[in-house]
Length: 322
Ligand SMILES: NC(=O)c1ccc[n+]([C@@H]2O[C@H](COP(=O)([O-])OP(=O)(O)OC[C@H]3O[C@@H](n4cnc5c(N)ncnc54)[C@H](OP(=O)(O)O)[C@@H]3O)[C@@H](O)[C@H]2O)c1
Image (tube, rainbow, N blue to C red):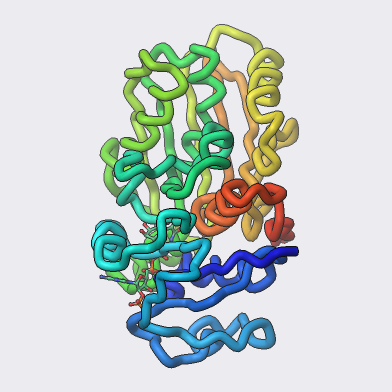
């Protein structure tokens, strides 16, 4: 199989590390360099010791632009724009950015949610990978928005693992704060609501409903659980059939008849959905791994689509389950 010459920027971080774990084994990828300012000159296995025996790569702080066919960027929000202004990559380099910088589809970027934008992603050279909460919420609600069922405000809660906040230590990712604890942040005001609204208006141009989102910090390391509900007059069968039909071409997003739990998706690129009808509401549970379907796994899925590869290539992962 032809190998695509690839580079990762921000490779010492959490999403960068996940990209490395996926791409060192991807049959269509050759990692030309992995970038880190803080870890330059160090072996990748010094920073990501779990990769022992899997790679001999060394971090560099130099940025080679020529000859790179695919570029992944795992930089903090607000850093990617400046990076790409400073380093001009050839026009045909496929750029996949994991930050929020281009999720408004500015500068020619395509929003990389394959369940909604697959055909556009297949043609795209610049892809803005969705946020982690945004991925879970959009997959929980997109079929309902498309069917015109969301006429009132939509109630959403979401809980995320500590890796969602990145590698750098902060007050609320410190073990002493996070363990045996739970807390709300950015009540009704999370930054991902913007990209979610953008997608829902793309699906249904009149979409203006309030998304009342309560985000929680969870006391676990990885995974996102979403619960969303709104008044619904139809039957559960009708909703389930409609969701299955919406996701029939989606190889990672599944509607489960049985109840779901977070461990079924941790360490996979899957989104599992489960629907219930209670007291006149349709309730949707969605579970993803924030670092995979919510970040690096979805980025590799977008890489596969942009290069005309099989969508699941390098992403047939095993859940932790227990
Ligand atoms: N974590 C998640 O679950 C998740 C999910 C979806 C999207 N995202 C997005 O993906 C991007 C990367 O997230 P992450 O969790 O991988 O972050 P991270 O663990 O903090 O890693 C970011 C990396 O960027 C580099 N960097 C460059 N300039 C920096 C600066 N001014 N401050 C701090 N780091 C800087 C750092 O590497 P060097 O200093 O070594 O160069 C660092 O290792 C973010 O935009 C994030 O919002 C994250």
